[in-house]
Length: 205
Image (cartoon, rainbow, N blue to C red; front, side, top):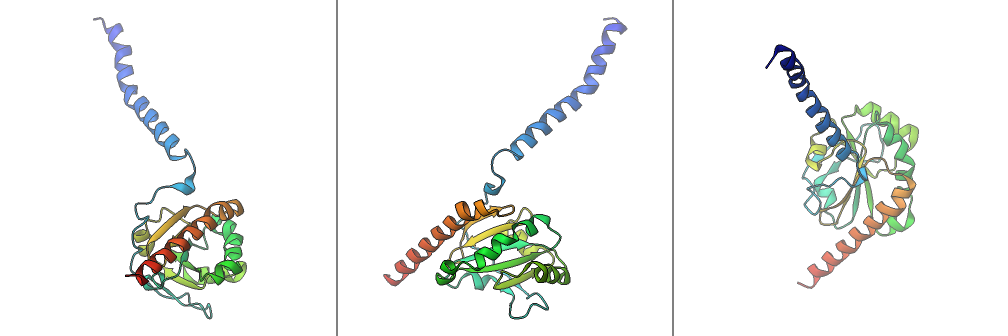
């Protein structure tokens, strides 16, 4: 083989790893952004929510902290993971306020709680004073450890917890009005039905 023939092959061999890397990266991105991001699977669906104790947000009168036991009191809970530095959290906030003011959910005992994720308490307080507080309880997760235990990918995320503490549903990303009406509210109703069925089964034991 002449030197002239081997030179192009040497150049091809140098570029081959780069071509393979670009192809694999493109495939990864295509799979990552395919479909509905809000339906990312969670290994914790059907399993118990983690046990934890988080302090209340200082300065927010009448709103206590959040513990794992609060999610095991026989009522359905909706836990929203938020942060003041999260622009999508601000975008979804109107839907959380609407959820908190829903008289039907209040009558059914559904509780809305917040998890302030890796956020300085003063910033969380300022954020809620500006846009309104929909939460009956807020846990300050300054280190983000509890969010990790919940399997949080990023903020915002919203969890529906059955009355026995089992995670029934996880919504990833900002809630829109359509997502609230077509996805979250029906999932809350499913959690309510399963909670009632479990309570009935307990009474018949």
